Image 1 (tube, one colour):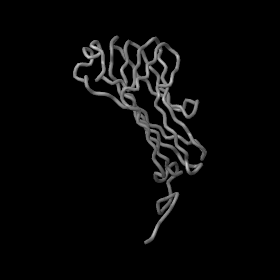
Image 2 (tube, one colour; image 1 turned 90 degrees about the horizontal axis):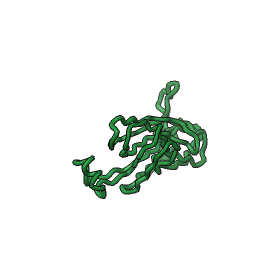
Image 3 (cartoon, one colour; image 1 turned 30 degrees about the vertical axis):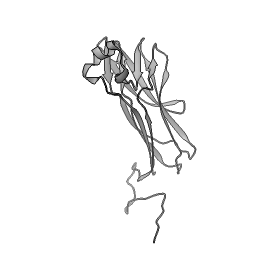
Image 4 (cartoon, one colour; image 1 turned 60 degrees about the horizontal axis):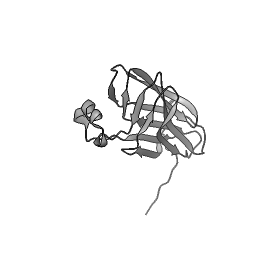
Amino acid sequence: MSELRTNRIVPRDGLVSGASGGIIQVVQNVQGIGQVNSGGGTSEYDIGLNCTITPQRSDSKILISANWPCIQNGTFTTDFYLNRGTTHIHMTQLYSSTGSYTVAYPNMMYLDSPSTTSPVTYKISAKATSGNDLRTNYNLTNASSDDSAVHGDLTGYGSRSTMLLMEVSG
């Protein structure tokens, strides 16, 4: 029986400028239902979604895909940051204009070049422009009667936040 091992696959004619090769490894973190992370005010805080990968090659890129269903109360904008360690590397915004509870599904996809073979941790943090009530991984099964009235047909469903990291050969 034969065995083929490789740490890099490049197309026959090479890679075009700016292109990357194949997927070397995939790491995922799913944050379970009921692990509610609430934030308020205008201070930045960790929403609890993170994942760590140890690149096998220093020229690899990391493709990060993350989503974190949440409930937001009020009229405001929330900035969500993708962090490598403690450094912001990407941002997306969620705007709520209803003045009441809003169910949202923010997500992010980003291709990063950490240039290391040491473990790299990515995480999502949030910061609102004004006071707010933001809940991630909210389990509507255990929702209060007020929440059930607001979300109606969503009662009985929970949400899970997911971060997927893929090492792409350079």
